Amino acid sequence: MFIKSIRFKITILYMAILALTISSFSAVLYHNVSKGLCNNMDILLKSKAGGISTAINTYWEASSLEALASGVKPDEVLRKRRNFNFTKVAQNWVREESKDPELLNIIVTVFDTDGATIASSKNALGLTRIPRREFISVLQGKTRFDTVGSMRIYTTPVFENEKVAYIVQVASSLQPLQAALNNIRVALFVLFPVTVLATGIMGALLAKVTLRPVDKMIHTIHQITAENMRLRLESPGTKDEIQKLSETFNSMLERLEYAFTSQKKLFENLSHELKTPLTIIRGEFEVALKKLRSQGEYEFVIKSALEEVDRVVRLAENLLLLARLESKEVFPEKKKLDLNPIVRGIVNNVRALAESKGINLSCRADEVLFLEADEGQLKTLFLNILDNAVKYTESGGRITVISRKIGPSAVVRIEDTGTGITKEEIERIFDRFYRTDKARANVGFGLGLSIAKSIVDAHSGSIKAESEPSKGAVFTITLPLA
Figure 1 (cartoon, helix red, strand yellow):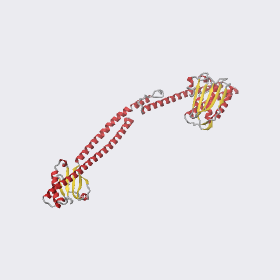
Figure 2: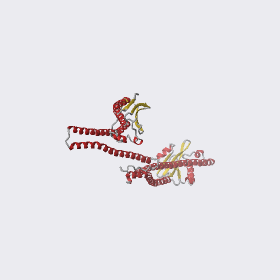
Figure 3: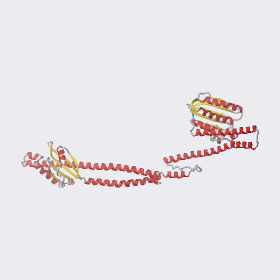
Figure 4: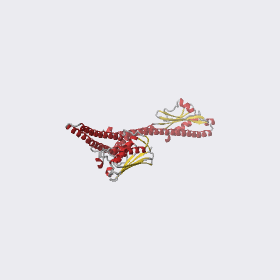
């Protein structure tokens, strides 16, 4: 279902992140634009107020000089505060300059120190009186910015001899600013969903293209069954995570195929190995029951059956040990020990069997080699390899065991002059139940070398076999030193 697909989830997540990003960007943009427009208006009003006060003062000075020339008293000319002549000058200037294009959108009002309006432009309706709180603060020499309705107002005192002579108030409508902000809001409101939706559609298409190799992989995986384990996923060749996923899955399929094949061979070999002793036991019992036998004959049959039972028990025990070692259910009980006494002890145990076949068995293991290892498992390891060496070495042959230190490892080399192993066979001798053609005539199950390899692996070591037909074999066991 598309809604539950990872493609849909990626698209929705992408759209949500984009929506959050655009929302944050729009909010910051709107705030900065609004603040910038308001600051620009305040700067404009402040500049106009300064220009107006300077122009009025210049106009007053020119009028004062004319009045002085006509014989008017200086105190009536030079004083602006509560001066009727200054009031007339301010009124004349405002009336004449209010037609200036630069002041068309600016409302100008001039107040005296009592709060009365001296002069105002024609469009100053409703702004001809300063509230008492504002008036007191302005008389104290402070400038003010106020917003009244849709008007932005700037009020500033003008000083004469360090005293407030009059007050200039300029105002401008906020409607153009609000119209500009409304246009920005509409643009952002319209672009926001369009951008998110368009990006979501493109993201969905991009996710579809990107995940197309995954769809192919899913189709191939549905075709893989226990009977079709050789099928592999097609690598997209993109050198990204999807290619790594396909390679990892193919590696897993190889391991599963090997496991299925090994299990199949295990059951086949196990059934074959169990079939022989069980057939012998059944045949001997059937022969014994055909007629009455003597006590000695019955004892012979029972002893023969017990030998086959012991063989089956050994098979079960070896299989159980091998399975536990490979599944890591049995961990070596490691302790610090010297390897060479163990090697010499196993050689002494096998010596009697070797001498009975006329085989010369020698051992050179004199150097002290300390390991962190399981003593019982090491004995099983060397016993299995030496037992194989004795089996496949003919009378008059020789088996040599050498133990020494090489770098950070203890190396045990077991060399014999037996029948040897072919190149094809040596690659499989550590497989469970595998026996060479020469080994099939001997009693055994083909588990000894498999157990030996599992023990070596459990001790973080390695085992290697080298051989040629009729030239004997060499087994090299490498174990890390303590």
